[in-house]
Image (cartoon, rainbow over all chains, first blue to last red; front, side, top):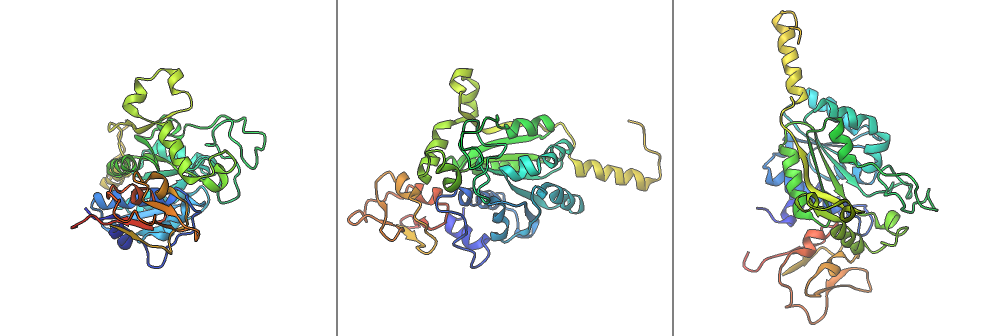
Length: 281
Length: 64
């Protein structure tokens, strides 16, 4: 197994370090975990496409030496969908932030999940719009302070994994920048999964979320993740009072009974080219 | 043995916080460094390397 230093030297584009993320930003940890996962899965650089939207986290695609695209705000999934349709052989990994994926691209998320297309979506959830100055996003916890909520947010937040699962995603998992080995593990499983997989990587934004919520020290944000992330097996045994304020980590749902979209589409092509009428299902 | 890429370090302090032996500190120049006198205390646990968001510190295991 390669060391982290070797991975960085191999997969980063030359002269891209130091990256532009703030001191203590967890995005670097998530990207490092992704490199570990890709390398452990033995994927060749040319067989991987990394597509991202807009936001702090979406800068990640520009740093790494795969087939990459830094696309439109919220539209990483439609572009990934198009790419996967044209090149089903590619391992398409979509990187998106919490705002990018759940607000601006919220509709795209539910429809990509509904189609069960074979993408691996990694949501960098830092609970805030970091790049634009700390406005609250649909994943900002209720009661948190944000630039646009100086008297605390009154909106309940999405559970993005439950949302994706309800919409049809066949693999949902969560990990944090504190639980790095678990993050690598769920990323590997997500990449291996045939249908639509979504991995929520809980990460810290010390600059725009932490400073407004008494977690300004980057290490404190990781300590918060350590205290609030509970492994799925332990979570299942907890009663609602114990679950208050915490969140489960690990693989939360997985099903293999649904057909992957590009496979179903291949069958359409075959039927159309055979000249036969479509059999009524 | 610890290897630093000082130019990449932004002094966030995550490595120093999670080091179980208190080997690391953030210097006045806002960079991670070994606390003077603790050069031989590193147990190569890899906590700093695993959590560093800036790929600025790596652990080289002895003999590896």
